[in-house]
Each structure stands twice: as C-alpha cells, then as structure tokens.
Image 1 (cartoon, rainbow, N blue to C red):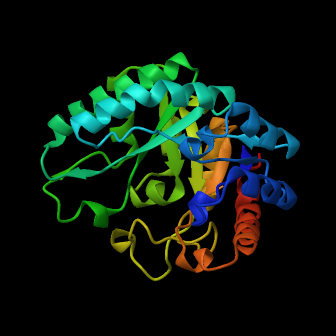
Image 2 (tube, rainbow, N blue to C red):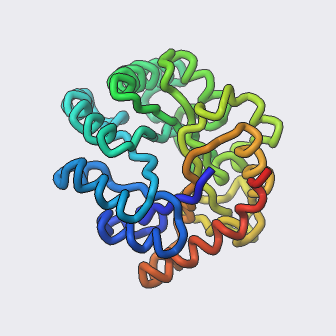
Length: 282
C-alpha cells in the first residue's frame, strides 16, 4: 500500500494536477489522483511529466460514464469511453472506480441487478481492452436507503454477487472504511476477497462521534482516526492481510477541512493518514 493524495476527496476538486503534484511531493505523499476529463485536454505527455518530476505514482479515476443516466446519455458517454481509456492508459492510470446506488424508486432488486449487470459489463469490456480494472463500491449507510421504495446492493456479499454476474476478469471493488463498518462487515470478511488485485482502490476516514451507526449520514465524515468510531485498525490490517498494494486515500467529507487553506488541509490529511498507517504494516 502507499499513501495517496486526492485533492477532490478533501474538498478541493478545483485544483489542477500542476497545483496538486508539487504539494503532494513536498508533504511526502507517494501518489496522487487527478480529474481525468479536466486533464485530458493537456495530453498524456504533460500528465506524465507532472508525475515524473514530482516522483509520484498515479492511481484511480471515476468512470466517465453516468451509469445511472438515461439511455441516450449513457450511450453517448459509453461511445466516448475509449478515448478516455486510451488517455488513462498512457498516463499509467489503470484503476477505475464507480459506486453503486443502494436503492431505487422504480426498479425492484432483480430488475436493478440486471440493469447494473448489463451496463457495468459493457463498461468493463471497454476498460479491459486498455488494461484498466473497474472497482465498484457498495454504499453502507442505512439512512441513505430510508424512504426509498426498493433497497439495492449495500454490502460486500451483494457486490461480490454482482461482480460475478458481470463476469469480466477486470472487475474488483473499491474499499471504504465508512461503508465497510456501516454495512456491518467484520474483519473475517476480508477472507472473501479473492486476491490483492481484486481491491482496485481504498479509502479511509472516520465517522461522526456521538451518532449511532444507523443514523450516520453518508456525506458527513471525519479524517481517519479522528473519532475512533470506525475500526480503522481492523480495516488497515485487513487490507494488509490481502496483500493490497495500491493507493490509500483519505475521504473525510469534512466541512471544517474544506474551510482551511489548501496546503493546511493537505498537511492535516497527511498527518491523519500517517497516524493510522502503522495498523497496516505487517
């Protein structure tokens, strides 16, 4: 595993790679992510130069296809996917991620399962041609499913079932401490993960203190280790036990962090990652 820095995940998504990379290097991060579509106009050579001169690895981009969009929008974005895949490959960015919405108001579970199986299969097929893996993320909070007609996948088992049905060799998962704990996953569940490459990306964070797990809100979190609500120690040990060797990003969704100057927020995030890193060292 290595420490990655994502400006977008701490509330600074407007920062360019040219702004992020030197700061990441100076703070001791080993890798960064970047906005694939925003950097596409700069070209692969430019992106590689930014990474190389700052001695940084790259890992992870959001699937540039609206899986949940209407048929016309989805078809248009799927058609454009190869050009972004080529760009990603040429910059060494071979980890693609996307989340699965854990509810629907129009499709029951079986209908929604088939909807996701078909669309993710089509996207994964394109990604596979460029050597890119696709990691799906289950979303754990109970509060996100409340008030909706049909529940959908929100646990590791459900996601494993979907990936099996998709049937592409480049399918995997995006791990997140917040969703892992709120879905009720246990340390022994790491044994269900087939191999280290099945984990495409990993996020770490913490939950709000004084709020029961069933009442936690998806977009309100804390820096990893900040409150001790989530079992970050077991999670980091689990990643290590699988042999995961990719980037680990902090994803706090913290309003307080967003209000800080960019460099100060990056420093505080790095300190939080450093504070829990020992749990993943074996």
